[in-house]
Figure 1 (spheres, one colour):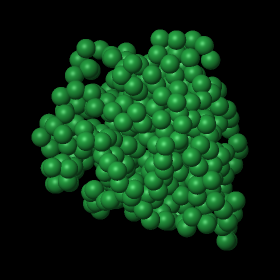
Figure 2 (cartoon, helix red, strand yellow):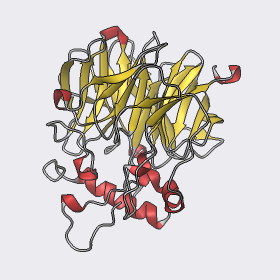
Figure 3 (cartoon, helix red, strand yellow):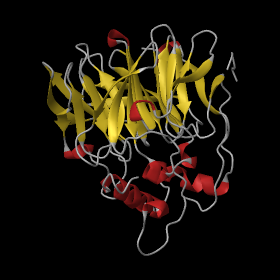
Figure 4 (cartoon, helix red, strand yellow):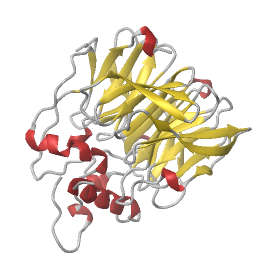
Length: 369
């Protein structure tokens, strides 16, 4: 484990363990080092173990290499797109980690605009988003990241799941995650309308049943924890074609299956693969026991589950810290988060490549099953 991983892990772990009081257009295709001694909120090192693999790259490179793909810009000079979801009609929704709020991109015209305003329903930085057409709800994970320099507005001081009207963007309700050290990351919804979220600060998958006002722990396992040095644990979550839940662990590079029996969690299995995952993030159902997976190290993959193992086929690489993916037909839309510039570990302030973008990756026939 490198010095950068140890440093970043320890700092992010401290942030996650801090109390709430301590955390304070038309168609277009196209760290601060902490001081020694007592550390206050204003002196938090803006750093993340999620980006340890990319730290040295930033030391030598000012601008990231842009993939040669069709793309759509995301508004906001500090947007840092973190998650992306889609409706059956091709509408895309993108959550913004930095500026907050959610951007809607219309199908065909690709016109983009702020759909959910920053600060709506008390929200702050938006991570996971999920378009639940059955309930006409746009679910979103909101976290207070002021201690890491996020400019997102809002009144929340913790972590919460937000519900917005999928057609109008109006707020519907907010449900806080249990505990004082929670971190809502990604979202999945089952056929009965229950909501499942990954808590990156704790080794738990939380469940919100229809009509419930509080979360229950759906599954919990020490294997979901971040490495000992700290950092992000559970991240991506999706239902497979077998009806079971699959989750990723970001810093540890794990992929797990959680058996689902009559709405309850069963056996939890750590799957072994032919490829060591490097910061696995968003997971989206693709076909028969297959998924699209974004690895924070820069790739979009196809992952096929077989028994207790998985095989990885890279689809496209060279992204700058990709954070999520959504599938529309045979096109995978990848959000390029450029979050290295958000969790900045250097003493200089580097401006990320602007505008932020999502990229269209056309899938070959063999990568659609």
